[in-house]
Length: 140
Length: 488
Image 1 (cartoon, rainbow over the protein chains, first blue to last red):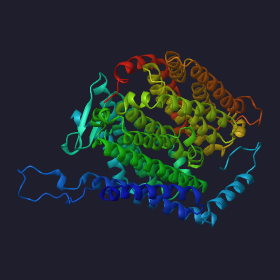
Image 2 (image 1 turned 135 degrees about the horizontal axis):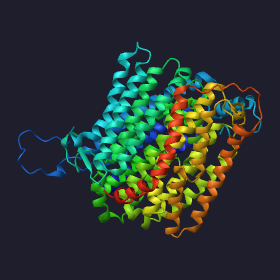
Image 3 (image 1 turned 180 degrees about the vertical axis):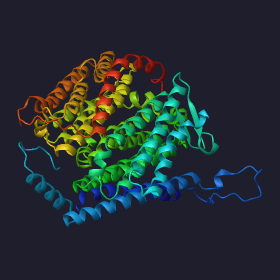
Image 4 (image 1 turned 45 degrees about the vertical axis):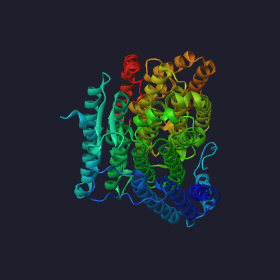
């Protein structure tokens, strides 16, 4: 049972990651894509946090007094993945911010959030500019 | 000066300059001046570092004084010194060259443009110098974020769309990389590259390590833009403002390739290359990239888009050299990183100059330049001939060493493939040369050269191509001794 619960968390992380990638590929709406991107990042963060977890362990803060006592490592959760994930969360938030800003400016230009409509608009744009020869794959 | 701190100074000089730029928002040229100053500092320290490590010494810097298994280690050896020197000097030249185009393209955010440029270069420096897998992820993301911002600069709205697409693809790549690092951390309990390389053989056979390596491979290949993962690259290079693409195109993918080599040769070593048949897979992918990139470049009509596909082809060539897994091809690829960065810088500066002076984007409009921009076109021809690989220029030597390496590895068809790709390169560049030199367009004979900074830097860089060609054999011999054994 304990083993199963330990694996369950990894399964959840993997599920989030796969859902994220799937939704980023399948959905046309830019905001949905951004939500899926956040899911993907959250999945990775969950994976790391699960790595740090141990059954029956405490938060990794040592009491002030017993610095010279040998420390039983099994009593404490691993602090390093948590520290790493703080940074990864910050990176994720800034990515989210940049993505939202770009989405806003794309929406202002094309008045739509659907990617296929934006691609159509782009095709139209490049068709209007005169070319001597047709381009292959110019707007994909 | 304390030698131990050189890696830190290389990173800090652009980083601190970036912080200082907003204080001088009232002065018109202050941002550009401070940016140039920061990059000069970075280049100075890089060359200092190069002088200090040229005989195989290694400069260690432990951030905060924490030694490797616990703290973050920055290390400078011959390879990283060469890369930091190249990145800082090229960024400086590009900044100087594109000052006029920045003024004409970027109207209300010129200040933040230079801040982002400096942060981008600082992040690239961090990627080159760090020896910590997670630290590398952070710098990878900072360089990518600033890269997205740079691609979205300029007035073209398409820049925003291509930047957003690059952001989606790049985030998937970064998440894969981070997940792979997590797998390796779970298997070994360390993030330091040297430590990881020492601990990996014990657990090498486990499935955890295997999945970790594959995830890191996919993540990095997306950032590099190798052929099946290249979807973001052409749009990003084409629709970025001319100033930004001149900065991004030569540097970003090259530094990602460096990180790839660092991890896959320095850490996973021969385990990954031989046991997982990575060498074979990479050779196959890179061969497709070399040919497909060149063919796609041939059918483009936009000059910058052609250059972008040519980049894909040459990225394939560089990875092909690394995948061949012998000293000659390895050094050929290192040389090709340097040469290709130089050539791409020239070509994108010329693309910026062509658009700035005559509004020309299309290859078929290059005929307008006939007799008007002699120096720019001379620089262009030198760069194009070097891309093709014509002997006295440096592009010849790097391709030559990769071909020799292919023969040494017994992969004769790879050698043939590289020669064939040179032929394709000649085809697509001669389309432009034909338009620029042999098409009769307008009788106007008045010379209207591009703006001085662009002409001077393009000509200067194309002279550098000759110089690099002259010194290529000695760099090669030096590199075989001090640069090939990059195992940590």
